[in-house]
Image 1 (cartoon, helix red, strand yellow):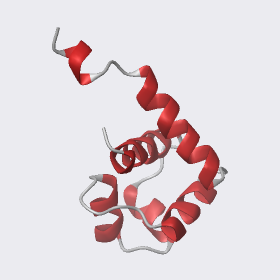
Image 2 (cartoon, one colour; image 1 turned 90 degrees about the vertical axis):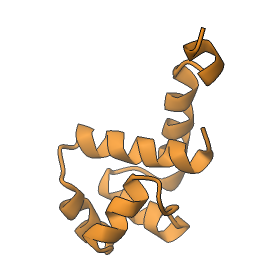
Image 3 (tube, one colour; image 1 turned 120 degrees about the horizontal axis):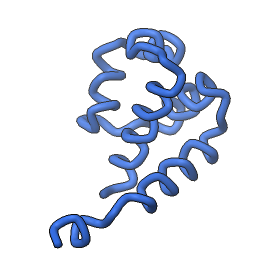
Length: 84
């Protein structure tokens, strides 16, 4: 899984934990809903400024969000393990 995919997955997880809609997250991050959806679906990568705005929405720093993304991805079985 790429770092971009890990970040998108973590933002989706934070969004669910905070029970906010895509529209609300987009508005708080100053993005259109379409732009946020593309990022959440890993069609477009989050820019650093976008990621900063998203992290602040969740009360996190960019570094915390990235660390959470890496930790969550590390706790999932690898593709090789999943196909055994």
